[in-house]
Image (cartoon, rainbow, N blue to C red; front, side, top):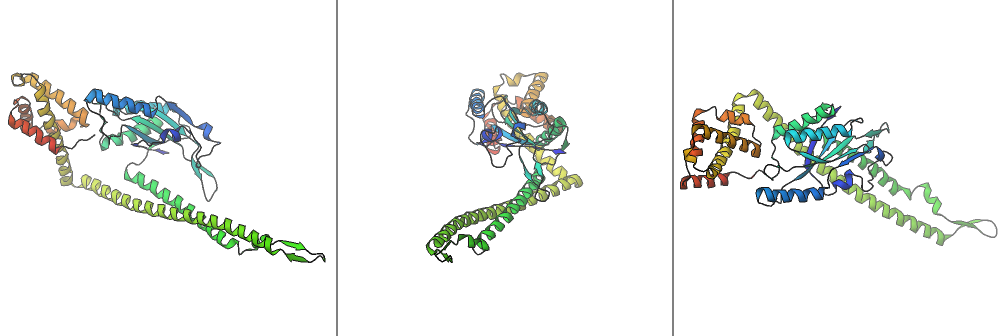
Length: 384
């Protein structure tokens, strides 16, 4: 069985859903007692704490578009325990700084197979996490290989196969939704058709009221029969309108899902081609690598210029001191921008670039450098 984990911005009704604070029509109440919950702190309380820490650490308010709380749905087995999920949470914090503070195991969701009529459970867990970087006070910044690492950790900690990730996984999910919506639509269409024919069927005879006269003959009571028909027509019209509205809503949703799946297929096709090109075309791989290293150099240059302002008597540093300061700056840049140290090693393999960056550190602060800092800052977009 395969697992997957995918973090997104937390929804406003997350706690209501996760901790079953109200009844939902898509769950089986008889299975709800099998759910398990763990809560360290409420979301509202954690957000207040995050905002206060950001102000204290960085001197600035948390940006409005930041996503400091995120939630993941993790595919699990029926036998998955809370302890295993807490171990996964521990590994996420140790290796990716993601701090999980709520876990909910759901075993009461699923669907009934339309062919076999058997219940197909959807075993999963919700992990709600604090996405704040404690070193900077800002939100964590991850790159694609970090998200791949999350999938590895989930598979390892839950002792399951690693599932597919990215666009392919989303594509499968959307295809499943379309299939389910089309099944619901078919049921509605059948019900709609049945309602339209109901008044013309033999059931309409039930609306006719007959009474015996003094000779024993059955005669139709016109006023009562008409009243019954009026009530039936009114009831059916209300139901027909409701079904029609529901049908139109389903059809609209299916159209939206099909548009989404079309876009995802294009995205999957693009990434497959790009990956294939990188693996088979040395020039494409070299170009992509060059582009990435250039962005690393720009980020490093900006950090060096900013840090050199803070160092007293920077021009008088000895070679050993200069190298120590450079290592400190590299560690800071790596931490704040999630850049692997191997990228810096690649850059510093070039002796000319090594000399350039070391000289940049002790070059002193002049008008030209100040202008250079400002130019670099204009070209670098914030990543939080």
